[in-house]
Amino acid sequence: MTPNKGRMRWHCRRALLELDLVFARFLETKFDQLGDAQLADLQDLLDIEDHALWAMVNGSAPCPEERWMPLLSMLRDSGPQED
Picture 1 (cartoon, rainbow, N blue to C red):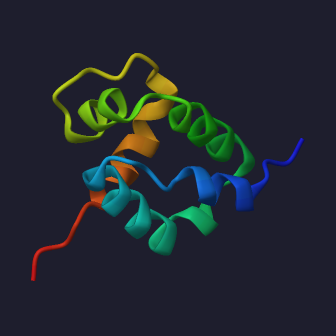
Picture 2 (picture 1 turned 30 degrees about the vertical axis):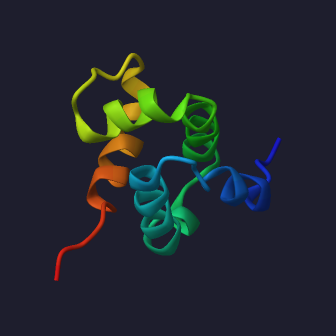
């Protein structure tokens, strides 16, 4: 089953500002390059509560799933850019 990209884009909108900024940039730069397996992993990440997800993205909490590590790396690389 092919993931619904429109719905996933909507779920990338987060209540936590830091995550919202990271996901906004991620959507601009990396989202359209993801394959179906990565999209499925992203869907699993999007089901995680914001504070727990932010802790994994910023590295203050370990990632419980090895398969999520590439996506977390992409999210870290997509963080807010300083001018």
